[in-house]
Amino acid sequence: MNETPAVDSVSPPDLHPGLADAVERVAACAVGLATRRRGLAAGVVWRPGLILTTLSAIGRADKVQVIQADAQAMVGEVRGIDIATDLALITVPTPQLAAVERRSLPPLRVGDFVFAVGRDASGKVHASFGHIGAAGGAWRTWRGGQVDSLLRLDGGLYPGLVGAAVADARGQFIGIASPAHSRQHGVVLPLGTLERIAGHLVDHGRVMRGYIGIAAQPVALSPAMQAVAANATTALLVAGIGDASPAARAGLLVGDIIVSANERAIVDVETLREMLDAERIGTRLHLHLLRGGQPMDLGIDIAEHRSAGAC
Image 1 (cartoon, rainbow, N blue to C red):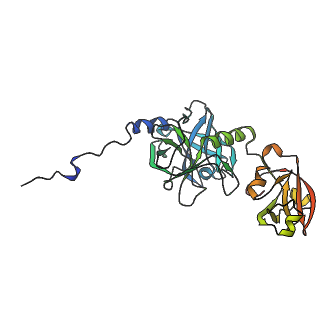
Image 2: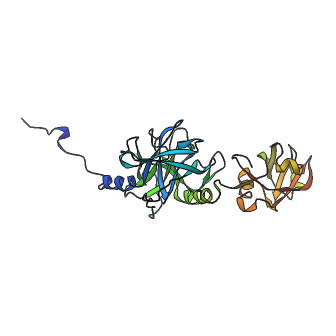
Image 3: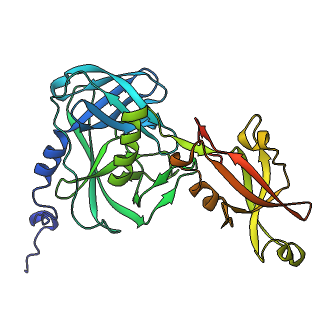
């Protein structure tokens, strides 16, 4: 009689040799975060004395319990938050925690292996393993935050890993896990975005963004409108104006159609948002628009917006 080997007689190959060591390296920079309302989440030591996490992890707390190895804990103070990208920066009284090692290899691709690392309430390391489910170029969150590249995970985030450090199979840090930008999947906020936003939070406690205070949508221009709008075919219809906003003070009206700003054609909301960065706060935006089918010019002073989502 022929013998058939048992199914479990051969161990599966180790697809990621050294993975446990990689997790250990990232864990040296990982902390647990606890707040009364949000429970346990995670963060990463960004710089000596600074911990980076997500706003989803800490909510509106101004102080956070920071959990290290062996359940050692300290109180961290929230230095700043950015609603638009879901990032938060926490300061801790000791600069002795090891800062994370950044990834310097080529960009990640769909299917690349990644893992997230945090700490539980006792300080023990816990991790989750998966792959990049989608990758792409720069994109904007639904709250208007600019993210340098798309790195979507192939699943959601386990409890306690919101705000966790995400690394590749070599243990090189690629970003922070956020649940705020997708209902079904975790999103990794990448290094370029972290560097930029953290810099603003260190300097100002917030990310400075300009606004004029309108809600708008693209609209196709009729042939008659095109004839008085320098042959533009698409423009931006003003659908709403905030009370006491720069647009309201300047006299912009609902129903106005913005054709250009500072002589640049405005074909969608994204184009207008690009003209409202922090460097332009306090300057004047010169609009060419149509009102009742007739051309006119209007100047609006760009102000700083303390919330997110509108132009």
